[in-house]
Length: 302
Image 1 (tube, rainbow, N blue to C red):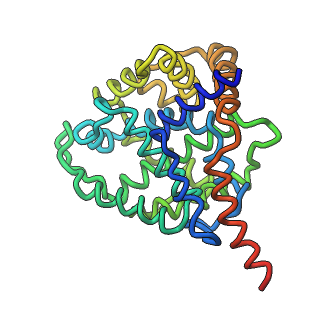
Image 2: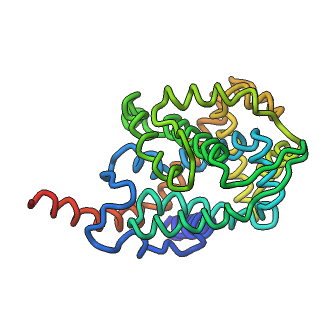
């Protein structure tokens, strides 16, 4: 069992983090409160620290984001997700973990990297409209679709006693909004009600382009090994259940509610628990907690 646990943990670390957790991003400097200056066990920590919720929510976010034709055009014309999907996953995971759990400097550095990349991503969508990745409206869309999906993933797969209350859901969205604003987003939703209104307001602009449908097909077949394809398939099916019904319809995904409830979600829950068992206590969380403990002690001593 020890060999199996180590094998799964190594594969998970290699796929999500490239094999190197870069713990110095989270452990130093001692006493630094981090970019978001939020306490451990706050809603953002809980949501972003839950593997099953984040993986299923991440797949749901990619599908939901793809329904914006301009955002999808940028990904289709500039991203290397087809040739290096694992690299894309690692960069996204590193950005989220660093901005949530990392030091202030580490978070600012990854934000600056993304800002520089965004200035180079521009072009013309198939419908003739120009786009640029640093457009504040597109940044708000990408962020909101992402964190909304992360939140739904957490609420679906966290133990019932650990799920967020409505007030904590609002706190989560308020805590992560500064990251989007640092990237250049405007009018970022800071509560569940605001996010729900925002998504409803965006609905007329959203539809599945051929590129969006291609992304879904690609994600469903993703995996470098048979074992990886099985895990991705389970998580993708779970992600389908996190999407709003209209998004499933747009993406031409027809999966009966009974299948989603009695097969997809239980399978993802079991798979997620196996991944969490193999990973064990998060080294990233431990490093960040130790760094921030000094900040809390200093504040209490004043």
